[in-house]
Image 1 (cartoon, one colour):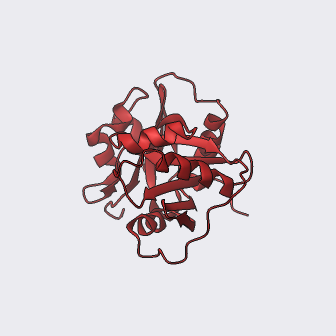
Image 2 (image 1 turned 90 degrees about the vertical axis):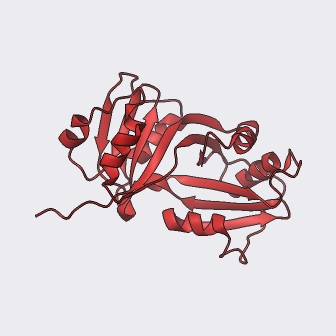
Length: 215
């Protein structure tokens, strides 16, 4: 069995309320599987998963107070032609038993939400009903991740997102942590996650670097 990435342990610890020391420093970890890297910000502490050396990273001046997510630093990580994802808030909730379970969806392979999940994650499962779609997958550093998309966003169905998110927690074993990455500017989605019981942990940017081959 492959060893878990050390960033996974940091996410799980944070989900239990054990955060890195808020000392303003930056921890540098190995790159993620699948050619991905990331910059993660907890309160007062940054974590960078990258193939670059720790000395290279630290020379760029990242810190735990925001510099690890600065555009110039992220471009350095990605290289000139690398892909830089959006800035997302990291949220966590836990599986909870419920009377009903969302049915599995096998007709949504071409849905943009599903395609996006499969581009960045593995073991993607799709569930949903008339309210919308839910994807569950193994995501950043191997953590379990959830994403949702309503069938009628902005239609005035204020409670649909919250109810869909709560029902989705029944798809997980009781107490198992599940993480979500939500763009802070998507206020409607962020409010729905918070109302459904999700707790903020930090923020992150995922990177698919493209660098000149060494040698």
